[in-house]
Length: 214
Image 1 (cartoon, rainbow, N blue to C red):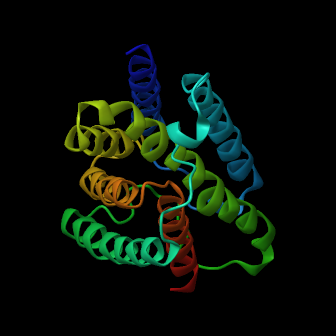
Image 2 (spheres, rainbow, N blue to C red):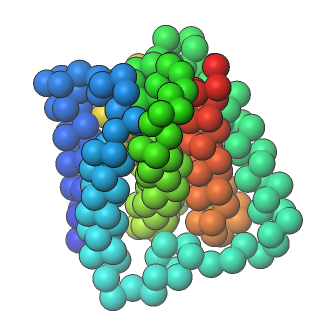
């Protein structure tokens, strides 16, 4: 139970910091992803989060606690991941449009600036690789393992809500919770965190590419 309390405290802290930042500072600068500082700050925060998650799971078999195991069938897992990716794009996309929350996070730039390709590439790696891996280990890895003792419905619900709140957004919260539900179900169906990471990385990467291609 101590591990669950620690995980909830971690997620609550992340959410509180996120919402407090929104209230006091508002959206990040429009060119945030064209700044190296954004990438460096993001990676540092993710590494701190990862260290705490590893501390919560100390003494437990990492392969089981974080679901760092191969799916029983990679073809089936990839198929489910593709279905999840499409479901998220359609479902979360419709929710964002319906709620007018498409630009609430304020990170994606309005166009491509070739003169600042370097910092954008650094932020791309932070947002589309480091972030998804750490978040999946936090929510679909450690979180799911901790809450599965209460049943799959509780595990999916708790981790999905935590994932949504952890982003510090209001209008986009339903879309983020939906994202969490789809990836949590993917974890349950495959027994592995890797398909979840694949979907999360692909979704974030696609969003960043589309943002500068429009």
